[in-house]
Image 1 (cartoon, rainbow, N blue to C red):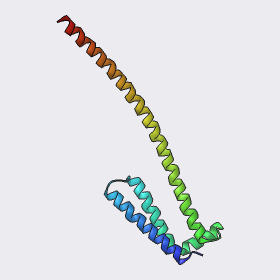
Image 2: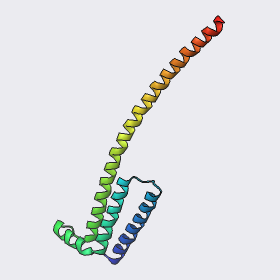
Image 3: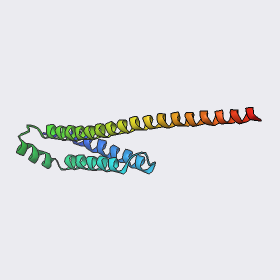
Image 4: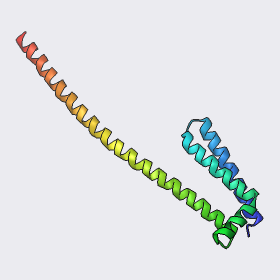
Length: 129
């Protein structure tokens, strides 16, 4: 059975998440894709908290003993999906950073060679004068 305490906690936590995300959007500190995920996540939690019948119905269909366990399972699964997505993005960014740092190293080495040739050319002109 989903207790009133759990329902109130879910509503408060979801509303705080919505407020926090909206503040981050206003300050342009979060990508819209991530903001949409968190807003939908919060909305779904609020729906489950306000209409616990949905949790009872789904838990009965899925064979989960308690609607509260269904809510926790739902939250855990969504957060695991988000973590997986973020780990993919992190891996891609690490690869890009590695490529960029190698490119910067090659360009700076090339610039040093050009600078060295230019300095030798200037020294040669100064000696001839």
